Length: 60
Image (spheres, rainbow, N blue to C red):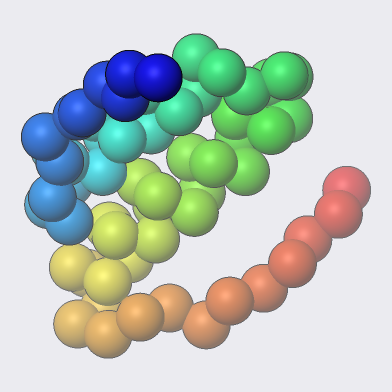
């Protein structure tokens, strides 16, 4: 069994790299949006606010 390693960190660039690698395996666009909000948007909110944002679950 081989594992592909992706160099990533918690910077915006690292979170985007993680999202891109993960989104390719997502079964639908809806799941891709959830992954994006959990990785990229959450780290951006942390940088902007200076602390972790309040988690909310939203179902349209």
